[in-house]
Length: 162
Image (cartoon, rainbow, N blue to C red; front, side, top):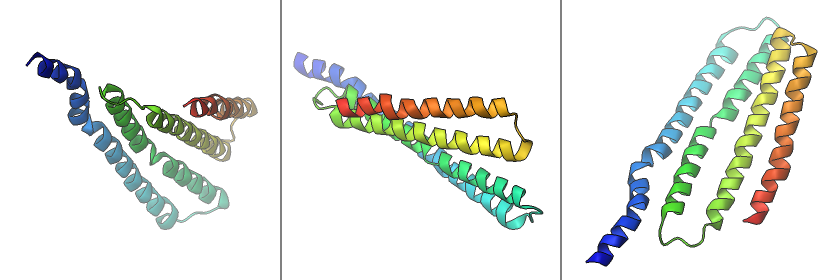
């Protein structure tokens, strides 16, 4: 009887994560679906319904669409990776955590790469729409380059170690 109680106490966090954190996964996927719907609505309304007078407005609209499309999978990826990590780390019988570590490192690289692409598109939009100052554009470029270098070099080490 005491062994059964001890197993139940050790396994309780695993089962709690298994059953309670499903809303994290479904919430992330639901936010991704909502972003997909809003992106499709924006594309339809801004690119097909509204007439454009010049090429700059059309290009700006296309860049906004690209930015929205890049952001669609991020909440779903974050929810699934968080759920899988918590479930695996709290599993009392799981000895091999290397696949989850590898998936987490790949998800970090994917999310950071997507955010770099979104930042680049945002900078192009600002440059097109508002004629941004050159020093702001240079600072943004340096930020994008530093995040890219971090993604390539630091996270590459994480993937190789697992």
